[in-house]
Image (cartoon, rainbow, N blue to C red; front, side, top):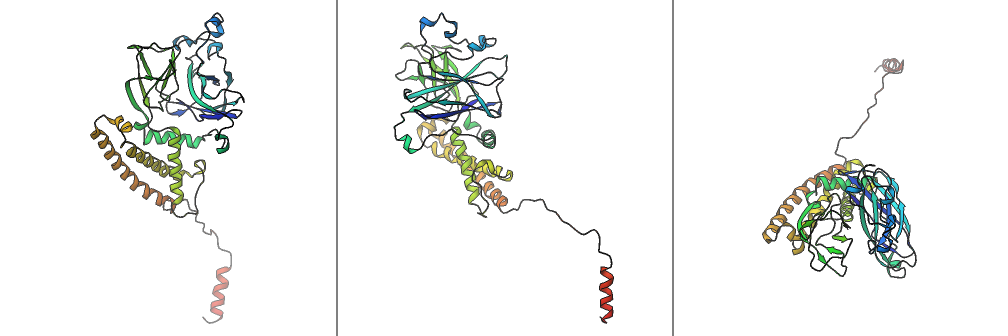
Length: 373
């Protein structure tokens, strides 16, 4: 699994593109630093006249890339790069890019190429980044910044997904037919936030195709050639109901809720500085916030149809989520109250004297008897 944390930029801006790598639910590093290329929508429209040059050939299939040389581990295009990504933390890598002032605006892609094992297949992940004109209102509303996710936040995101919202973050969709826009190579699908850990199963005219396409993991399949008018594409994929940004906002909401509980003098401004005793309460409140979103969203047709075309199915899901929310809410209130009021057992130290100063008691007794007490 790999996730990008930035999706917008301005002409002439210096950007840092982060990518988070997970394997089996844990942050993990590729066998070697990933390669990153910045390409536009025409990255796969290579000239046939350059096909005689081995460095301009189309990339090999995943099965034939096991023993490929480093020269074929990335796409050769007229874009930018390849850059070698740098590591910030375990499983968190980034690439710096200075966007040219005259770069055409619109949608670009950053293409990450890596291997989990040095002798394994080459994996390619592609993410979108929208480049806006430098003189738009965006420049005055605030320059977009790269999101730097700490190890604590990444850990809490995994816990929130695996312990509370796993099914909502891994919803399967079977045999959905893609629809086209103006692009003859791009197929669009109903839901975004595809699960990067699950490779989509693509059927072109009822035939499974494992190569010749890539995905941005956000509801699009991009083919390497123009599709015919009568081509039909069906895809099986998994998607997450909530994006990583939304899940992070749920955790922040849990932090804010804990800050409102007396005593108000104990508060924290960011997730990275919270005490360990707050973790369970913040996760539970974040799960409650996610359930609120689910309950509200399922009242609308586009979301409700996820749980069945029959409206009764969506209503049944709403009732189940509401009951679960009520249980979580009661548990959270008790947990948060105990944490902030220090009712949990704490470490204490008792010191008692081991020796008595010599003569102290004797002088006291002599004083009493001398005065006739």
